[in-house]
Length: 87
Image (cartoon, rainbow, N blue to C red; front, side):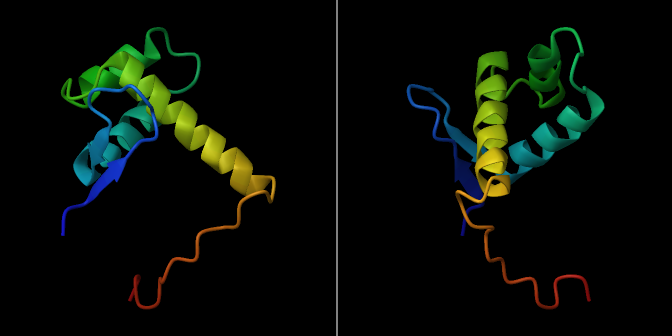
């Protein structure tokens, strides 16, 4: 089974994100915090250029919106099966 997430960014040519791309994205976001000049370009480059700066920015906006919906209670927390995940 492939580990690919599909961003809901309509109109994006490269809307699928592999688990590796998501991991690189997360690591680059942690490194290039808010307020970093040219943040999305730097995150894109840190990911190896597999996504454009616009795709990276849009992916972040979608995830940020998802978190806000969950935290507001408008969307329930995902029910992940984590039994034994850290054993």
